[in-house]
Length: 121
Image (cartoon, rainbow, N blue to C red; front, side):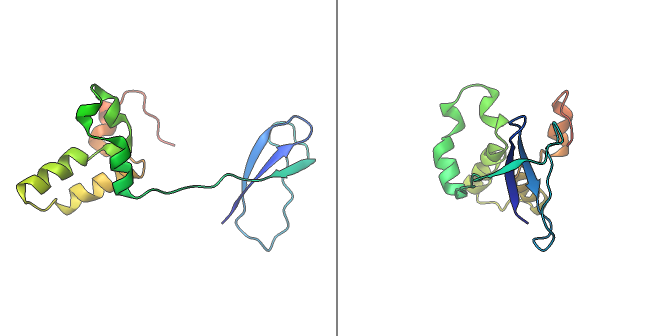
């Protein structure tokens, strides 16, 4: 399902439209002013990095003193994975699932409880 981006020629608001079916004709309108005079924009694209590249770019936690390193969900679980590997023990399936979910932006329930004001979307 593609996402198309438009710019309203009346109020210059940028909008994104998720297209669920390419068969049906598009008739988007601006959510800000209701205008129908829209110009389709060239959308950006995603560049996915391997987990190894992400780890190399992020560096070790000791390089970044303070709690900010672990605010990036992709880094949650790195210490756990490293320690299990050093001990030669396989990570339990549930822990692997929680680490993978955190890397995709979903915080584990115990961590959510520690985040005051965190809102679910």
